[in-house]
Image 1 (cartoon, rainbow, N blue to C red):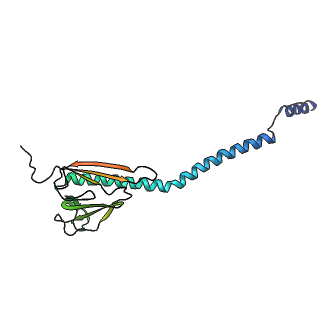
Image 2 (cartoon, rainbow, N blue to C red; image 1 turned 135 degrees about the horizontal axis):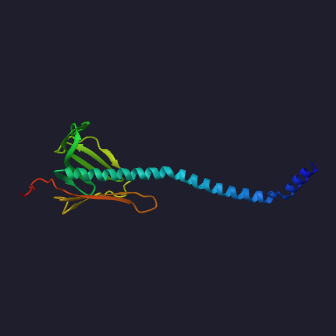
Image 3 (cartoon, one colour; image 1 turned 90 degrees about the vertical axis):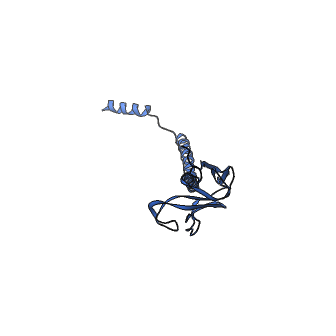
Length: 192
């Protein structure tokens, strides 16, 4: 038994632990690392609503640019136009131009885009422009109202450019653009 006691006493002398100072320094460093990580996490969580709203506005604008381009490609006439206003006689999948339900067969209607201030709206009317339905907001947070450009001119365009500039806090606006050469214009018959 005496031998066992001597062996245990020898083991205890060889064991070295951490001093109180070493423990305090390690704990302080650990708290600094955890505090820094928490600060980064909280700032990311706080900025998320702004980021989500900005991403939503950009996606909404991208969808609007694609929709306008598609309607222009299908269109047969551009009866009225300016840098912030576009009217297209095009095909719309609805039961009636003036407030019809979505779906059904595609019918010719006049689609009206108005981009004023920081919003862009879309309304659908009869092909002659009468009986326009309620305007629906299709893009928000615009940095400029001048969305449409025309070549050779606004009176008889053969090409319509679309450029939506979405406001960007603390920087240049994010610009989404597209353009369409009008190919279904009346009077332009295909040569055989």
